[in-house]
Length: 102
Length: 102
DNA sequence: ATTATATATGAACATATATTCATATTATAA
DNA sequence: TTATAATATGAATATATGTTCATATATAAT
Image 1 (cartoon, each protein chain N blue to C red):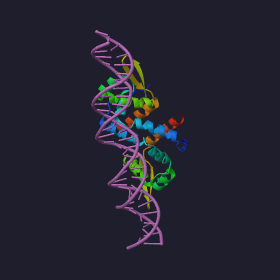
Image 2 (cartoon, rainbow over the protein chains, first blue to last red):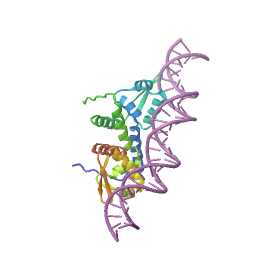
Image 3 (tube, each protein chain N blue to C red):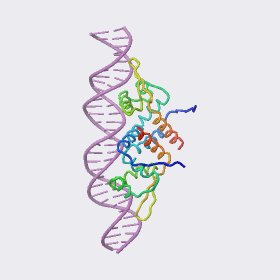
Image 4 (cartoon, each protein chain N blue to C red):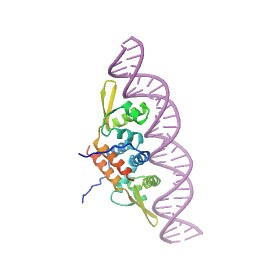
């Protein structure tokens, strides 16, 4: 048996946790992260693949970048995005599997 | 090494996953769920403990109940709520721990 | 029946959010 | 320099969301 402590939640933790889940609470952001599971993709590539407005994708990527869920790498005019939080990606994958099987 | 398949997300799965994370994206709901980790509590008790409006707590509990994240049990005038999704509670706990240690 | 207590509900409202549009920035090529 | 391509940004807007208020419902006690 594993003992688990449930301390009172401090404001900072509460905010950080809620923000992280907020990132995963939007279908568009889930689809973007899902694409970035095992590869890096450019903004245009993401937008085309998901049939989304380029501006929309940029906004969502900024959101994810601010939370350090994705990182980017520039190559000429192109910017390649990739995942940057193993833990969150694992949770997302778990939840997708869980939802699929029901 | 573990092979992972990343199929395209169907609409239904996408909606379900996003809704679940939406439940966890609000500080008030996180605090309520956190209280229900290892016990059942009445609406009034939750409201008093978290210093929240009774109506607010009722609304949030309905939200969580619709997603089957909590269940309830009536005893006279009092209704006791408790958690009803081990998987989601585990994810929440993981994320709180993860956020705490940073 | 009346009163009191616990919870739920709907309307109202202020704020947050997702998306689009137009345009700015940055880098490459001609 | 001018033109083109990739991305970012800010304003605008429609919709979603969280909270409160007033009130309804349900149960129990007197």
